[in-house]
Image 1 (cartoon, rainbow, N blue to C red):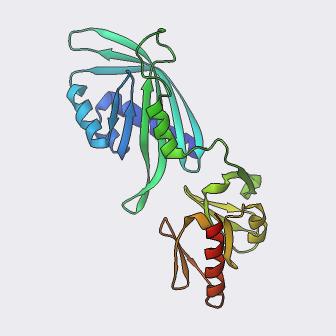
Image 2 (cartoon, rainbow, N blue to C red):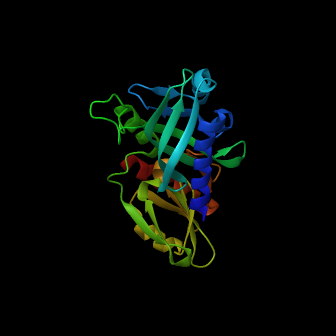
Length: 268
C-alpha cells in the first residue's frame, strides 16, 4: 500500500511538471537537486537554477503525455527509484508537434525538512536513449557524471555484505553491515537497528545482533552497540556520533569503555 502511495505521488509530480508548469513540482525537489538530459551535456544543478532555466520556455511550449508506464524500485531504506516510460507530445509556437518516446528516472528519498519528514528528489534523469536512433546525441542513460552523482547519493554497494534480520509479520530485513550506526535493545526479543536511512525493528535480542556484526562494532552499554566508525567524541558519559546522536555510557564503566574504544579505533 505504501509503495502505491509513493508511486502515485511521483507520478503526480511528473504530470504536474508537464501540465501545470514547475512551481509546485519544484517543491518536491531537493535544494541541491540535479537534472540530467535528455540531450548530451544537459545538466542543471540546484533547484533555483532549474526553476530559472525551465521558466524560460514553459510559457511557450505545451505538452501532452500518453501511454505512461511506471515502476517503483526500492534502493534502500527510504530511498526509491521511479522508472517512467511515456510518449511525450511537444507543441511548439510555430504549430509544429513532435513526439518523443521518453524515459525518465526519478530518485525519491525521505528526509527531514523544518522538523518534519518529506519526500524529496535529489536527481532526475531524462533520456530517449532506449528508443532513439543509433548515433543520436541523447544523454547517455548512465554517464560518468550521473554515475558519480548516484554513487555520492547511495555509495558503492556492490561488495557490501548484507546482514539478515527477522522482522514482524514473518518479514526479513537485509541491511548493509556498514550502514548501521548503532543498535538499541528493546523489551523482550526485540532490538532497534538505527541505520543511515531509518530504524528497523527486529526480533532479536542485542546479544544475537552482536554476533552478526563485524569487528568495528562495540557494545558500550547493556542496551547499546555502536559503530566505531561513526564516533566523533566521548565526553560526559556519552558517545557522540557524526550524525548528532548521543549514546549513554554507564558511569561505572566509563573509563573502561573509553579505553576500549580508543584501542579499537587505533586498529581500524
